[in-house]
Image (tube, rainbow, N blue to C red; front, side):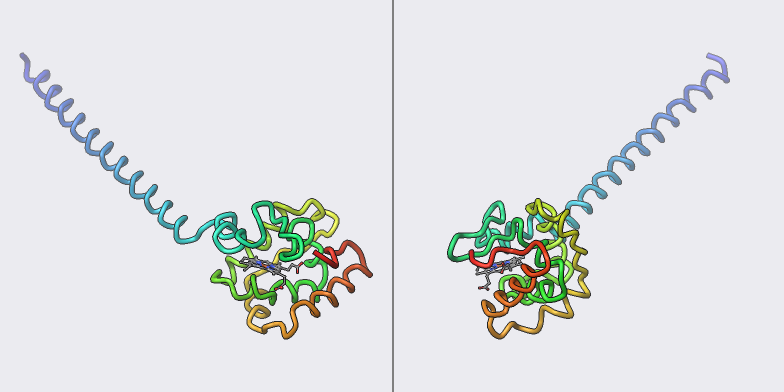
Length: 167
Ligand code: HEC
């Protein structure tokens, strides 16, 4: 065996070891990244998950509500979102305002609902809620929820698409 061949063999072995080490490092990095993404997803659940955990028990799988008891959010929420009074009501209604969701999570759930289950959203063209808007309004409890709702719905019906007066 010539000296050159020995050098070559040693070089190849060294190269293979370095390659394996790099591969192991890349795999480890990928696993760390995947775990980090998973943890952040668990910490910040999606609006769909937040709806399921905090709202769906009352408002239903399709946000359809329960006749006589719980108002539908489907084909209704985006109509409330058309006016300042409607937005004010939505952000102060007990089920939403008193939920365990943070301001930004509540904004995200409402914005998601208004698109997901609301075929009238295009007609209402609602501006999404911001977490600032949520934090400004949610801490002022409504004195009389149903009276406030009636007044808001009457005002909406006078100016365009409105949620149902009765549910
Ligand atoms: C314990 C049952 C319950 C839960 C949980 C609940 N709601 Fe409600 N929600 C109601 C009822 C009942 C009303 C009607 C107003 C009232 O009587 O408080 C309502 C009204 C609303 C309204 C206004 C709609 C209208 O037509 O008056 C919105 C918007 C809303 N809820 C969103 C939510 C969101 C978002 C969540 C989850 C974060 C949620 N609610 C959780 C029972 C609930």
